[in-house]
Length: 357
Image (cartoon, rainbow, N blue to C red; front, side, top):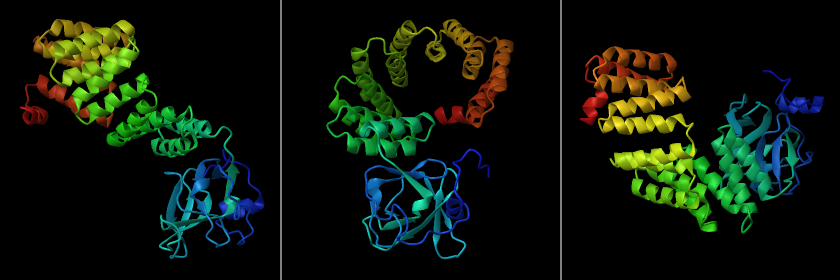
């Protein structure tokens, strides 16, 4: 394991964190310590436990009823009886976890060596935790982000950051496809700030994801009322209209999105799809051309243009475009659509066609 990127440790710290030793009971600095803040890994500085999860188990070591989600790994101890816990980020030894002691409502005790942790006091209350949540959100660690936003909400009750914390936690839930929970948080954010245009826009996305397109459109309407240049709201309202079979209204919204930002290749590609569905294949091809000009690696635009050429019976050009799409995008998530494109060109019925027909 590479250790140069971790904090330097003393010999005593290494004996516990790397060699899986145990400090003497009642000797650690955090055994009888209950200040408000976060306990972080001494080796890599990742946040592990919130102070409000700490309790006095009278065992001689710091005890926590739960970790910050995703930060602690459990594995069988070599003694064959206990369960070891270690930092999920660096693998540093923390201690052991015990279940069934009935000491707390969670019925779980993380028994952690003080020497495995450091204590961090929040510098700005709820804003500190909200910022930490945003850091984790931006690197795709949505469960960790939710944990920090939850702490932030507790710290910012009636404060200026509360609406933002609810919105960002909802956005994190949405990234995990937990849209009902996301909607609940967006509701809270909008209740605290009825002019929160981004919360309306994101709530609309979650409604659309669960098939409630009319409610999604209502939210996009509100977002656009609050910000007439909300490109995201125009694009998403267009997609909602498209899913409802209202292609002309979808095209009108794609037009608006392009007016606001003429450099978004997805808006041209999606408008091209709507034109194709209406049989306006030449106009669709113009949009796919524009999407590809903006993003020469846009595999979907190549495949969609290939389908439009196929509908115009220009099969050689169709094959060239689909081949280019296949060349550009070979990730597993794209193979089915690209494979569908080629099977249609060969005149073969695809499973998707049968299911839809």
